[in-house]
Image 1 (cartoon, rainbow, N blue to C red):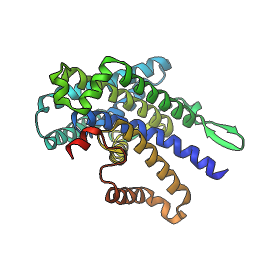
Image 2: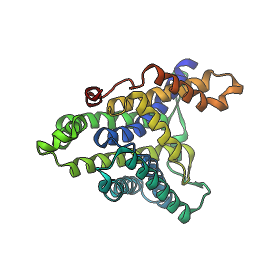
Image 3: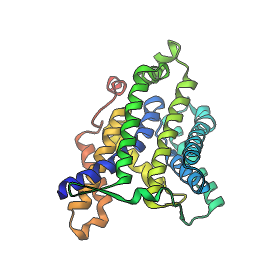
Image 4: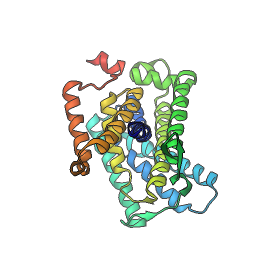
Length: 293
């Protein structure tokens, strides 16, 4: 029973990591950009929740979605579009610059102290089922992640812009030659990443009950690790990597000796390094990257 309880916790945490990793992996698949400013999209959603405490739930949800998406589109238009023909290192530095800029703007406005946000406290209760304790937040998180992943699959397979994004991920140059509009495809990718980031914001605020200007830093690092494990350039690999990192984190927390549990993250990253020795390209390398190799 304990093993099953830990499995439920692992899948729930993996679902959150998968959402964060999808946002990183989607941008990389289209632009070959590792957007470390993705964490600030999560943070912006959290502070939007803080600003709208007490408003109707639907208004809050729509506002968070809009804020994260508009910020993502603004990043793409102001910081990344002018540098699109630059080398990857320049784009990476730009993403760090955007990250620090947004962090310090929020720091100047709200300060450095974490602030409490009573967002859906009823999700903190649990459901008892066959001797298992299932927090409502975990249940909602898993269902939301599955719905979003199914929606993304349908979007990429059946919508015109989704097919164009898949083509751009395989060979951007060839896609542009056959009429795919680069600005439109990349803007859609950033908009989707903003929506995914807002979902992570809801989870983090509901789980911790607080927001801070650094709330997205750890999550974007985990999302990056998950994307590398799954295979940079593969959206499916990013989701798979997120679930694997969540499962490993919960397993270590449950089965490590008590004295070693505070160092759980260190063990996670050590396993990550060992994994790269074995499979440096990740579990699911994209076709475009395979062709380049």
